[in-house]
Length: 278
Length: 182
Image 1 (cartoon, rainbow over the protein chains, first blue to last red):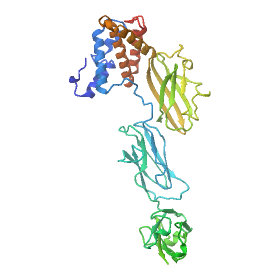
Image 2 (cartoon, chains in turn yellow, blue):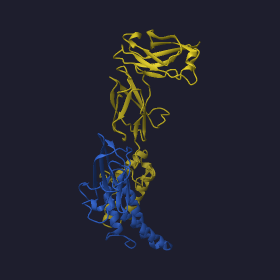
Image 3 (cartoon, rainbow over the protein chains, first blue to last red):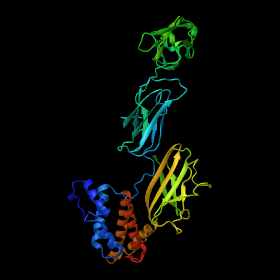
């Protein structure tokens, strides 16, 4: 009989018990003696008791395992949030995986938003153990964008034993994004928008084409009671073009030509609005 | 290759394999193979789909794959025999192949014998001292069953099959220690 006090720890004891149960020929205590006696219905009382105790010892050491081990329900479901980064679609080559499986993550241009990212931008997808993405990511995968696309692979870690939910951990800003920026004017409540709202994406391949953004007025606003000055400015530079100057009634459509900001425009643009009461 | 998930049940003499892979879209290229106890090679099964109530590749979560003894050429009896069964199921979703390859311990005859022997032992419990042999046989069956399951868990499939053979011998064979009650 195998005794726990003869082994350094549970792992060593379990290995010895497994060797015993497996009829390991190198193990002089093999259960084969008992099994052969049982097979031919020979007196086997001592070996039977030993087999019983060794099996019981295995069960108590490792947790009772009287039922099958294989999962009947998926535990390694894997998914990514459907809207990680503007204009980029994410796909996985598998939705169910086991630890050790190699998973391919691909991202491609959605083909319709017009968002464009600088080549070399690194998109990081964090994988969490919950769909709310709370707590720390279990691990992250980086994708380096080239022409709005990237592919990489990762191996499901052996430490993962449940569903995985992917989400971009750093939101990338498209380099042709146009957002609204509320300026120094006093009456920000004129427009139904928030600071930083995305108005669209200019065509970085055709800067001479006009870009038009629309902004709705808030309910009950009399446009003739206000005047507006607006400018489109490249983020991080002084490159700008004036779109409106003390215009009244305040407009809800803004058009400018990106090339008028800078002929080599290559960054996000803010439409800065200054609204005043007449 | 990804892992497909199936829940294996035994219902009215048939194996029911319920598709739990959490994607409801249509499957293609379904392949179902089984290796029954004592068979030397796995057997590819056909004719498991196409009828009302069958597993539906276009609606995979609706009905289980049903496998009955008549579907398996190697099973010559009317019931599935006791032993270690291997199920090897694969299918495609889009361009991805999902595979489920698992072995289970299926021993309904032995389980019935254990139950019957236990009932017989309990009936005579007031005379416990004279029933030591019955108890010892029961203990032997139960611990062999546990050992067989441990073998399955540790992927010692041949050892598990040997223990099933022993259990069958003790339960129902000519060398049964306690044939009464079997």
